[in-house]
Amino acid sequence: MIIFIIRNKNFIMRTSLLLVFSVLIFNTQSIAQTNFYEDPSFNAIALTHNIIAILPFDATVTLRPRDMRDMTTKQLERMEITEGEGIQAAMYSWFLKRKKQGKLRIDVQPPNVTKAKLLRAGMTVEVIAAYTPQEICKLLGVDAIIMGTFETNKPMTQGTAIMLNAAFGVNGNTEKALINLTIYEGENGGMMCNYQKNIVGGVGSTTESLINILMRKASRRIAYTR
Image 1: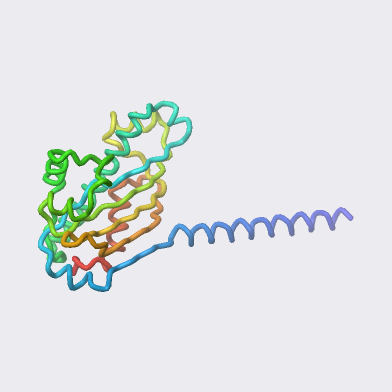
Image 2 (image 1 turned 30 degrees about the vertical axis):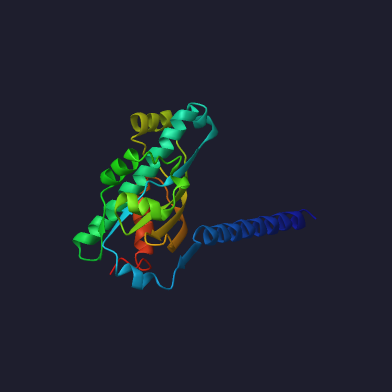
């Protein structure tokens, strides 16, 4: 009788481990999911473009509850704006490297130029949704824009990553993120491309490293790259 119970426990343990393993595989597959849409005319339209701009992304950052208690609403909002601008800068840096390698057909407007033009027009992250892609492209003087959303969680502590790298140099490990990237052309404001992907980071992962992963995967599908 005792032997039967021990064997039964072993069986339950093996079964439980198998179920956990199966769940982990399922979650990994879910995390790796990618959604991609491209307008059939994008390749032809992209050939007529000379310059594009990248807008700061609309970022949402989730911290641990104990880290949230140490931050005000305004601090979190500022952190999210900084994160969105960090994505813009990382994406621009990636495009710039491709341009120097001769692997990019168009020019990309520097983020500081884009920021200055948006600020002069009063187009902050909070109100930019009130403008059409056509209006934004015309204001920036570009043929197309890249914009989108970015949701990320940053497991922190250790002084909330030394108070977010001394008040919003940000950093802090990015454990996972969901990015939704869209390219709109300026002539009629049509959506040319939409790329949505879950990205998994880990210890040492930063927003820039995750954007580099994303752009490496997206580059084969974006009409501007050779």
